[in-house]
Length: 137
Image (cartoon, rainbow, N blue to C red; front, side, top):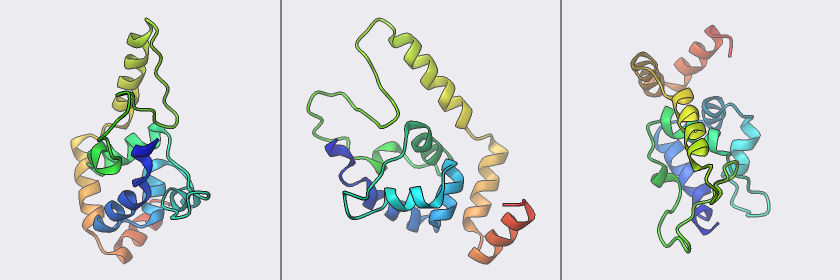
């Protein structure tokens, strides 16, 4: 999984550039903050990786292209294996594609949600905390 060797650094850079805390990323992906910390770990023995649903949630909700998170160059056999997602060479590829499409539709933001996220991301850290307190977060 060479393409995930730089994932931890890329995620941290994207998160910091977008002024997102690890907690923000955890909320976006529906995981605990400790998991996000493990995704960014510099020690490979402590590093974890998101599943496909967390990865899709992050990419779609932050409008981040997948190729910005993982290095897609120099793939040995052209097969991309993401944690939590398995493809087979059987005739059931249609079923796998349909499930992937359903997952993408599940995390696709409406125009209103996109605008709320944009405004939230541009808010100060203090205003974000206040908004989350109001929402019960």
